[in-house]
Image 1 (cartoon, rainbow, N blue to C red):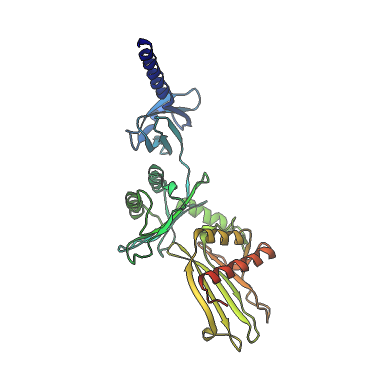
Image 2 (tube, rainbow, N blue to C red; image 1 turned 90 degrees about the vertical axis):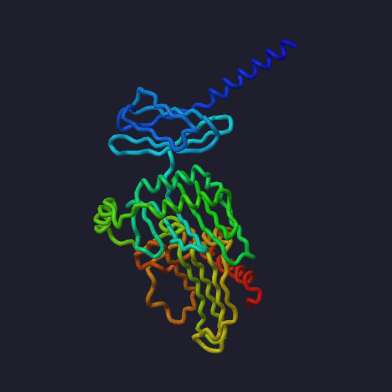
Length: 380
């Protein structure tokens, strides 16, 4: 009986040693100054302990030791004012992993309910982090705001919300939300809800709202001033490619109109648009004895919210298409279709859209017809 007990003791000791060895993680971090001048701040010191080790190269090594399961962020600040944010994850075996926090390229938050919240959208551009609050003019924010948002998103694992789209249709009041985030490492999440919410919704929304309500904003950054001067010498662009120059999340409205100029011709309009964070689809069919047809000739119409799959399909049809200046003198008698796209931040006169191929146009028309028939069973 002594040997099994001894074996069990050795096994426990080996397991403890293995867990201890696996708990440490190191990453080399280039530093603008000596490690001794670096100030390290851990958001949750109960999750991980940090040590700075000397490195023969220009920089230092950040050593992380897991203390308890969870997520946290670490900030390395230097006397010259530079700061770097790192994300740390510790699993249930106390294995710690650390990596530089990616940039937030898009943060889009909309809420509605008993309290009034201004929609907030932040986009990373070459001239800085642009902020759109409600209907206010574009403003800029800084690294402190973006780091604060990332800390919340990472620590609470908000990216696991991706794909959450639930609503309680029998509840007439309450709260709804839209949250969309894209990171520079390719991470993306999109979640919506109406009186149904993902895990930790309450504390996450409270923390995000605190950052949005108190972030420092400026009307113009130095980078933007320089960018404005430089671009002033460049010819104005008039042609843009959807999916490249125009991100799908920037699309605000898209119109498709077929307007025959003969009596009894069928007028058809499809309208895709964004409303308080929701992707919407509107359709209208007219058929009359004369031309032009009026609202009295409407035979079928409706507005409905698109599902996430429908929105993805819509974006796929527009992908690769081009937007160019609108033709103010269309060919007489041309029934179309006329297609126009409007996107956030556009300052050009380019609104006329052309599909990447005739095949995509035809498939798009079939897609719109199926949406119309599904949303309005009485459609012709």
